[in-house]
Image (cartoon, rainbow over the protein chains, first blue to last red):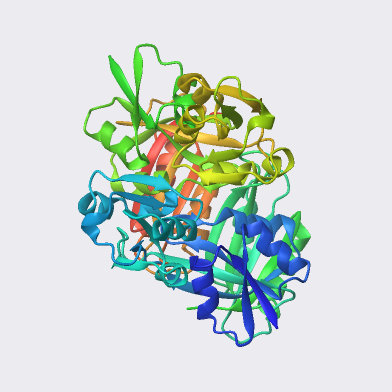
Length: 273
Length: 273
């Protein structure tokens, strides 16, 4: 039996993402942090891991990017994009009018604030460490409702009082599957890179973009990021179209390797779009 | 009396940042969200606001960037960089050995996880909506300790059991002061921009960087960001050296305005470094 590690506990959006991959014979293994997902795959406890990497409202998931850039030799094998919808969940039989308090991860309550103000005004909003913890608390406590994925309601025996309670439609999270080695080329691939600059070299980014432009390689993401030493000491995360086995991508990376401190390939994998 | 809005409640790192500005005759006004800080300044309830914009570990604070880019006509007046240190706080007289549980904002517990595992193994770590809420809970509950700024311990009458409990040294947050209008030129300024692309125009970023390079303008940050409509529909946040009243910065922006969908100046203000 193959284990697939995910950012747990059971019922998180990471598990929703894992289940949507529909991997036969693959059992989910809940981990308590993104770092633990990486560790489970590195130590061979799990065959692969599923972690969030970018959200359309919150932006990049820095813990995942940093683990890929600094801490691991694992690579991105696959990506998938999931619509993030929150449900209001409580113990079976609860009505909306019975709800005296709400519990949620601070990010979830932030994303549903207007809905809560409109439909549950004046209720205190307590904090939870995860959406799943919130749902477990709500199911066990009469009068308390939680924000979380519908999957968590199913897993923990809660009732969905209302779904789609998020303030913004179109909230999506991109998840990545991490594992060993580069995924084979499919012809519609994407490559994620961490580019480490030499010290304070003006024009470095212009040079980097020129190398990609010369190879007609489209960039789909670029983000400067302070390295962990100090704010302002930058590196870049770049996603580009193509596979590291494509000659024009390989050429661009070879040229960059001659000039940058380090070019780390975080993975080449099929583009989800 | 002038009011300065900050991301509250009392005792947050945003209040630490505000107090470090040392504005005479300026009373702090706690707000419950970043959006509320912007609203307080827009409606004239407060003269200025202090919000976090970037952390050296967590990355950009998307709520602040998005408020500046999409929702407000306020501008960044000033920036400051604060060292983020967490203290373990409990009711007066508590010893480390008395601590049976910890309460913290999920981000704080994430940043102190290794310290907690080493010094308080096996204790449950409950969630709070803010560092200040965590400290208030701990001060009111025997045996519970919280993670938070030393200022919160002072404000809520807690005792610092241990300071500097964060796992990484060098954790810094950049805060910005928001208000009306562009700050006057000082000669060592920085300009923050939101650049909105025309639809799927390959080479746009190379062109943007060329305009800055032509004016010898150093970029200190660049970040592509999905607009709120869909992941992959990008804009850029750019910080550059110089003031919008500098002729070479003005020229670069005028050239960009001719080609991009929108160039929004988020502020020109003295560089904190």
